[in-house]
Image (tube, rainbow, N blue to C red; front, side, top):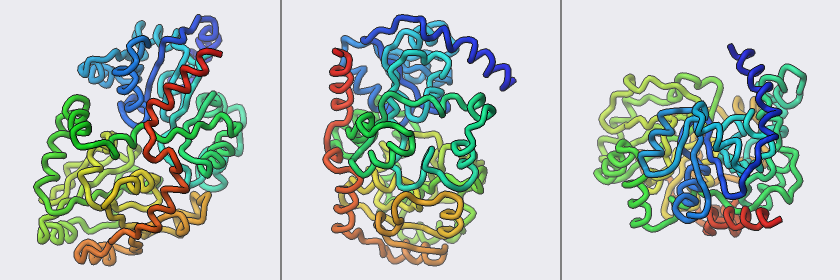
Length: 397
């Protein structure tokens, strides 16, 4: 079936170059048909502030399309005639990973803006030199290119956050630096806006589960969130390095809450997680509206660290129980410890003690230095408006 799908895709692809594309039509999408990340926030902003533009979310998921329509915006399944038509006739495509976030075979002559989904501290794309993914880029044989065409279609533009990031994205995607635009990330606006704007967003554009979770967080003295990066070893479990029962006892003693948020690639049986002070957050849920209501991030090598550091008054625990193993499979672009901040713990006992004693005070000097390096001037700038201003400028050419 996969081979048949790719054959059909390649038959369609040349015809996608024949359709006239309107500069006033934008198509948005995200990986696995979800409604999240940078494209979600740019889409919402564009739909509300650009009445002269025909904006639509085009999704691989019919459920996601229905969800976005329930918010009062245009949204189509890419498998519908309306979705195909919008994708084929939109001059500008915005996505979080690849053109497959919408549909690769409909992308001919579209101006593609890859908003990506994280800062580059680990090696990504063509910069990967070890591990399973290295073969995808290092051995670009016919089979790889046939089954992953979206990976090898370079975007016209790639979103960056600072000069240091542009250097890494440029080599990772093999793009000239001038095509990496240092506008910051749309998803970070929800972290930095005032409470009134944030609650308006949550009440109008987030599911009931998110609304209820935000209310729940306010019942506790502190809220932790565990967000580890993706590991092949955690395809079905991501808490094998934790004794949740013992952790729950410590949290309950302090009236504190832990949110468990796996990577979207991880499939977790949430029914197995039954603890009074530990809540599972679906891996595909948009966690950004929830992050401001947490106090401490527990993470490892995930780039969510850099988004989290934008917020004042937060703590960070770096839980690095498998550092050597992880680095052997996916090395870092930058020296790791020179480019992170937070309280380091290397095993579960140390993590438990850190939470019990609240020993995770932020080093503000390190935080500022990291924000300056990874975000620069984009840290507090309105990324949404800057992206749209850029698109208006290139539309005039």
